[in-house]
Length: 499
Image (spheres, rainbow, N blue to C red):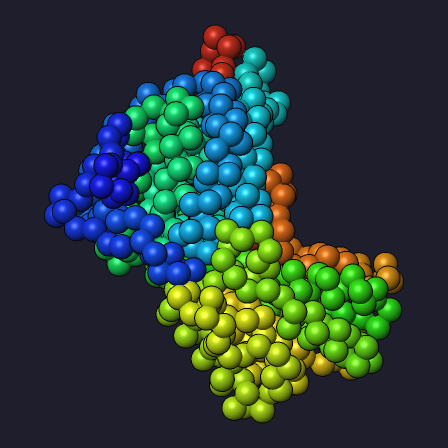
């Protein structure tokens, strides 16, 4: 995907191509500002060409037997496994994810590829008896057409795999805009698919910015399906355009995920989980633990240990194995995160640790922000209600289980949630009452497995799920088939009822 001058190019049809305008933008590492690559900056011109390429490829790809399409994904999975370390290094450089986590990101795509490939032999339809003699009925799953995919930077391989691999397995073709903050590792993911035998035009990539490339993909008359991961405001706009144009739309958006810790919990386990949930990927996950809801005397028994361990977490280069928290993705993101902290403190919350820009010389070249714990956060305050997308944990007190559930549910989002308790009855009540698409018991709010559904309720999404079987329903149309072998005209309800 790069030429001799290290420019990351679009991929349209079988070719890596520059923008017609020649425009590029610089991709710089959030760790130290070094240049990772120049990236072709696309526009509606490249989107038109990519969509035309995908349309042209659809007729041939859509009639390849689904098991054979699955074989391509199996080969891609093996290639991703062999290239995991190389892709992880690029991911760490371009968006700051620690190597360990970057490898996990890629492994999730590998798992998804194997799962998706196996569904090539299980694109089930449905059969049922006809109400007439010598007649049968059944359903088939058929591909829809060109799918527009727009993804976020924080999981530049895993999240695209959730959309792209099921869509391809179902026989669709794709135009994809990777996030402008992390296009290089995504391009390496795509290269594994092309090298595995995916035909030209089945997967096209146009690099660039949302207002130029993303908007053109969304509004293009020949993209029949839209799959998006990103912010809720952008998702709403996509839904409006897609609804007006009668497109099928899947949205995966924000979260404000709570961990409830009950007095009977294993507090050591809870601290481990909260630290990983809040500060893994520097808090830059839609499933990040953003709120810690402590019930009863848990606060007094837990907060000191939590703060002590958060203070001890090591910031640094994500390529260094000793690093525990890497940088935020950009200067703008760090400024946004710090603004939340400053406003929360001004509103009366208590800063327990973090909350300031690092002073160590080794961290001055990047967009680092320390693990931050803010205590005594008031219900309904900005920090209690808004997604931060950074290493900031809001601690909120509750007097009872019921109040904790109320606090957990009062935000506009509903992606992930968690409760730590040894009481199975209480755990099951929480499972039923927490308003979220995912609930963990005695585990943090982050983590997903390829064969289980992933997604949320309320402002987190629009009802669809990624992972598991859901995408294979989303990326296919149902076709009903009737076969009448009676040799006579049978008129269904007219002929099978007297009077």
